[in-house]
Length: 197
Image (cartoon, rainbow, N blue to C red; front, side):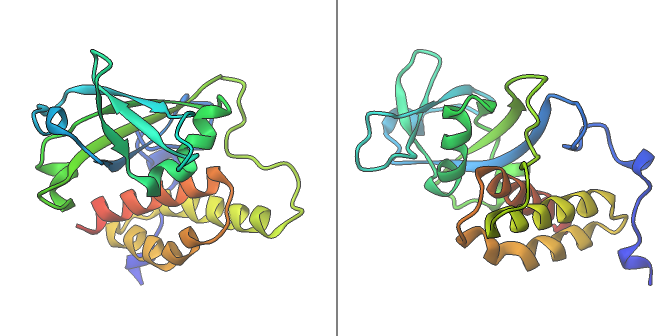
């Protein structure tokens, strides 16, 4: 059956996030919540900053979205912030974000939402981002599973296979996972969304 045929490693695109020494980890689509009037006036391709809001007592994972003048536009979607905030605070990753056009990446979002396209990079060339030392807990085992699934998804020739895999793993995102595992699930979801059409 051809639909599950996988690519050879050499055929995987160079812009595809990988487990090798590249600084680039991946790109995900998220959104701004609690947005204000400044946010509604933003233009496509404008770059913004993501700042963990350590003073926010009601939400320890809150990440504030700011423009280049350091004016607050709102907060990053909680579903993204809950795993991204620990990685930013621990200095494991750095983030670059921009407001994409409503076509392309943002076309699947609600008309009322303000999308964000976030590129994530390892904070240090020496940071072994994906690896969890030892397999000692349920979270460790699930991380190993998701890592393997992500590697497999990169190799599929048939685009819809990545979407099938992402759909099958979706329920894992509701469980207690390592931040790196949540990140990989987010990458898989984005990969499935783009390839599955």
